[in-house]
Length: 117
Image (cartoon, rainbow, N blue to C red; front, side, top):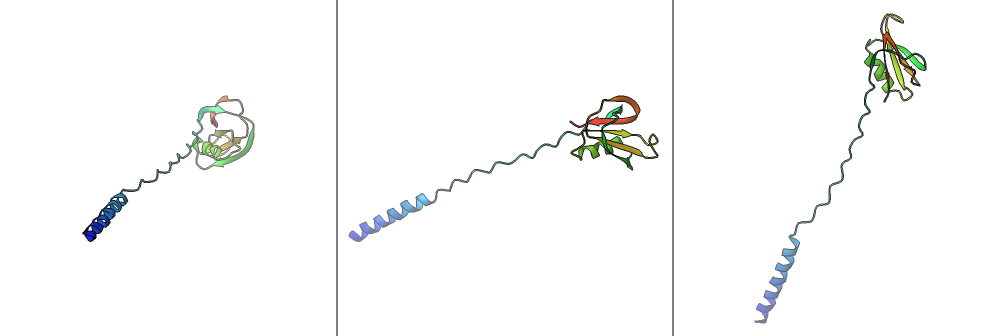
């Protein structure tokens, strides 16, 4: 009888231990996902506007579109504004003028300008 009681006790302990170890572990909380920084807005192009003065760099453009000048300004930390001059006005090619300050806008069909946001 003692053997049966001892065996029953061992079985009940074994069952108790096995039932508590089957509980699934709580998963670790997910790491917060970082939101990438938003790209700065592109500079708006002002058609028919010249912004004379405050130049720090100028160059001819093979791509005769004001967007090429705007993109050059957006990539240069010194650039605060730009003026794109159409091909045939200052030479055979279009010309881009990058500015380190924002000069006053003047109406002129030769050009397109912009100010960085």
